Image (tube, rainbow, N blue to C red; front, side):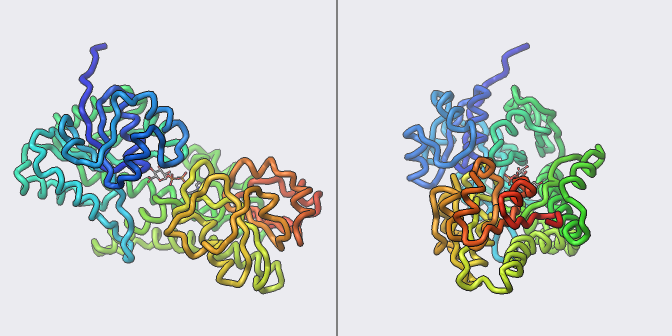
Length: 434
Ligand code: UGA
């Protein structure tokens, strides 16, 4: 097989997506410069550390340090680049639309980059953004620089593997030469490449996340009906998922989806549809069902504790939006902690990883304890909000003894309810009648 050309790539944005993309492209042999606007982040990366927790990412960055550098300076980033990747975040505005200001900042800095072959947007953006970026490039005299969309489908915790062995790579471009160039960049990635027009590529990303979110809200509603009828969601979901047309994934009932993607992207797609004159009713329900889940968990605890949480001590075990990440953005746990505090409860929490997140201030008066057993000590109830494997190792008999009342809401279906009951716990599960 002929050796394919290694390219120079500038990555704009050193967050989860930019770092994983940059490190993986470097691993594939390309020369990558990651540019971020945060001096502290760039300092940490230059010192050999990684500012986020993502399994395998630190090793990948270390192994490729000859080909992977970090800068604050966009001119330095594009100096030797043929392709510029836009990987900045697109946070939601209050109306649910994506805030594209960081994308436009990057596009602005590319005005003098006449030597580039392509500008590629990986950030999640509304359908139609590519057309606007194209127009901005044309206006800047960069009509000869190609534009492409290359959405990402990596999940936190498995991002490196997801990049290297994806279900598909989606490339949106109308230009065959650009499709070839981006296909070449991904040489060594073990997955099929789907090439399509820019609008469709932008939509694939939003539709994929919305359908995954729909599966979760659907199974959470089935779980609620299971609780009321005596069925067991784990058995139901397992057998439902054995139908190959439905698939076994994303059928784990819990406390609702969180993170930086599903909540934001589902609201963004709803806003996009609404702005296009179509009210996306199903997606509206998916979002409403998701917002209900943490509230329902608090209501159930409150009812079990006699109708009031005032003065009750509640332990929240796990604060991140899922296990194996340090990310607490839109985590159900943070919503639950905030609601418990608002109801007058005292909140003790534990997480092996979660870092304080300024966006999650409503629960900042919760007390953070170093171990699950310390977090539940003296508590009237505990709630498992993240499926951290460490929680399966806890000595639950000792934990129960340390609690004022051994009441556990297992929001992730992590533990064996029967064993806990034998240890004296009252166990409330999601999607089963216990
Ligand atoms: C998600 C998608 O899975 C990725 O494909 C996508 O690229 C990414 O968003 C993105 O748009 O950047 P991520 O947010 O990292 O990835 O996490 P997931 O593993 O998808 O979990 C999202 C939330 O759904 C978590 O809170 C998780 O606990 C919850 N979930 C997931 C369930 O409640 N039940 C399930 O069965 C699966």
